[in-house]
Length: 216
Length: 216
DNA sequence: ATTATTTTTTAGATTTGTCTAAATTAAAAA
DNA sequence: TTTTTAATTTAGACAAATCTAAAAAATAAT
Ligand SMILES: [Mn+2]
Ligand SMILES: [Mn+2]
Ligand SMILES: [Mn+2]
Ligand SMILES: [Mn+2]
Image 1 (spheres, rainbow over the protein chains, first blue to last red):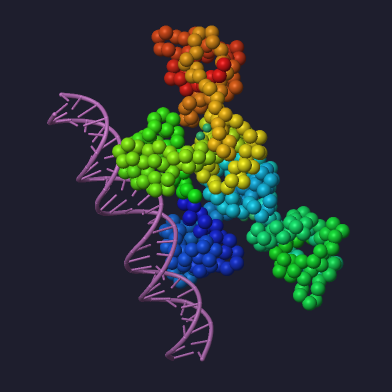
Image 2 (image 1 turned 45 degrees about the vertical axis):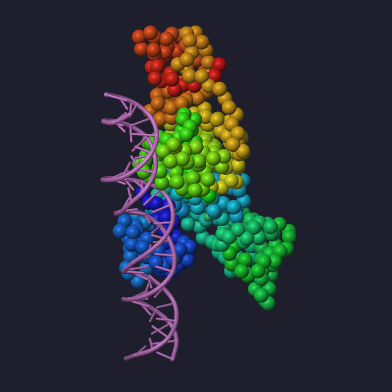
């Protein structure tokens, strides 16, 4: 059984592993809002428990055991996010903080029943896939909206940025999951994108377009 | 903002206050599974934060602030118990442990939305009243089943013992909330009670009868 | 190949909540 | 009212997770 803190470290290491493997001490420190020295201490502890492989000055990788634990936390986090949006009418920019707490509730029965209650959702409110109880993802292939060419169409199925300001911005523009869009023009000057959505024409910056995920 | 531990102390002190005020160090130690010395330390801290009134060797009482905090934790605990039973099909003997964790999730919005989602329940799965957001209880008056005389009738509306074995036992006998019962006989020899429930005749010990709460 | 910079680790201290053992105080018994 | 017992508090230590400052290792620049 892991402490909240250990679980947080495992989850962060898991997410950072996607970007670079092994994961560096400083990267963890930044994400977990702590100092590098504290990270080193915790890594030693996780290594002791065989949840990570650790070589001094080389960074860490998750062991199989550590990876499964991390995926399970991600599963709980995303299921709770679905619950908050679907059942308690939270907005998609309000769920993350609360899910950060709920994900640490330790009860296998709770998670399985919650999954059932939500009718086994495959994705969370941000389009991120929810692993099953064995840690398997239905891996969905996403494309950045910024990669679409003029006249190409697609459906919004995810976001790669979860900050509240960004999500609220999208909401205001009507750019929510499931919406069908078409790129009507890409502006040379700044790379911003003009979109057609439900007969409206809107313009989004390149920066925003990069964080919207599309399936065709 | 209080830590989990502080919240647990406040809740226990609140519950013990009903029985004896002020609350003794040893009573807290026993309920919280710790040593008296640790309790003294924590009491000092809570006193520092003006959540309890503390006089050395005299025990503690909750301040108004402390009482409101405690009631709020009780509110969250009971709302989550309702959720687990009503929405996730937990049995009434399975909810307490999980609610002990869920009660510490800090989000005012979460609690208010949960309350709404559950349609503002007045009691939890054990018949205990759920305070509103201002800390007001709809105080229901209960009577111990053991106080009923022969031929008296009543409805089961609560239990004063929450252990899993006890609750499972009641469940097996069909003695669940809302059931109508009639005392058909009180056995002289051991004080056990013979009941009529849904045309069946069952016998329960005096000990069990003491922990079943009735409204007429 | 040195030197400079960045990253990481160690050493030692701090905070929170706990413990044991010993000292105090209060309550009960003689 | 003294003595005995029970309850409570203090003193000092410990584990978990963190921090700052300093040392060590790895990388990058000259
Ligand atoms: Mn999230
Ligand atoms: Mn999410
Ligand atoms: Mn309970
Ligand atoms: Mn209850």
